[in-house]
Image (cartoon, rainbow, N blue to C red):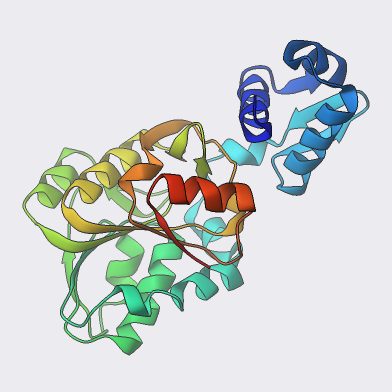
Length: 252
């Protein structure tokens, strides 16, 4: 078993039980306790767990559906870094479908200054407000307002997305894992995102380095469904090999 596969199995146990013990994991995977400690150390550095005497506990925020304002201010420099790398992937006059994530909003703000004639279909109430005086031609999906995330969701939003065929889909996520794919914390939002990806010729995931090796509540798309991943830091060699196998271009 490869190291990343073992860590994902450890994560699965953590999501079920909230706590793991080094000795038990060493027996389960037939490896040394030192190997398990290194696994837990890596997960701690990524902010997923906190190590305790003899084991580790899951950091609850990993699977938390945070309010929009909290998400907007978190890792803002990383999001702006990602936004600045979008220019080569988007052309003047492109049609774009964009989710309600704070990372995608930063991307749209950046594209507003560098591209002309963009048409953007979005379920983000914040984007509709903040970009209302921009050069972007905005189309709202409509739908039920989910106040916690300022997103429009439900059958109205999903049906609206089905009416359009677009050049590019821009979306983000709560976690990306080699074994669980791309995950999010809310099912209603995930359903809208899934429809968005189906309507696009080019699919671009915007994910800062904190999203890697994390698993959130809802599985909604395989990594292989994405054409480009744009992130703020160089991923590990393990991830670079994985993206190559999945035929996904990585920009960092």
